[in-house]
Picture 1: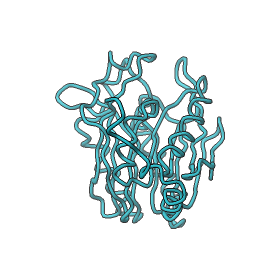
Picture 2: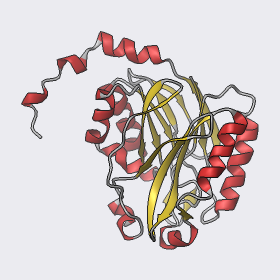
Picture 3: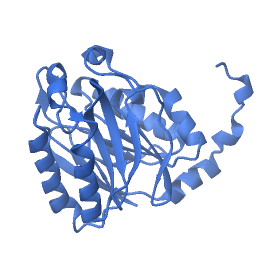
Length: 263
């Protein structure tokens, strides 16, 4: 399974401009490269324009979702569509979306953990459902958004349900880039799964984003990684057999004793 990650520099508060950038990227990087899964970053339609987010948010995904569905059909590719500002009943959610090759929405998730350092809770509404396993091309996967990465209890249930890949869409800051890298590697090792992350570059107001979009294998090895400052495409081939081999050689899930663990 070949993944293509768009490490994107966003145009703050301009959904139309960002859509055009994504359209151009698909035409250039996805069209003729046998891509199986294309990945976009967090809040790619607006960036973190939180104080004005209600002005730029998409009403119930009426623009963003059909846009991604058309791209999926046109280029015959699965899309982990990052996340977008999604206004539902006057509340704005940070909503991640997954579209299959046929243009069908196979999964949708509202970010559960809002970032206190950015006062997200003042502008966004947290989701009330944890991530669930979904499938693309017969491979079981999970999807989380940025700050969710810090909560291992959110991810372990996905591995227990045989997820082989975890996607992380983000606007992670340069100030905590060591956390970004090290936590991803840890999540890959402790859950024996591929971790595929898509982060932004560039800056908005006081925040500079760190890039370093990555693909990490179940052994914790970085298979591919973007730079810190430049917009670019990061690609890698995912081998599902690597997950099975890691779980066979180091059978941590068979060694678990859940009845002894504190809840």
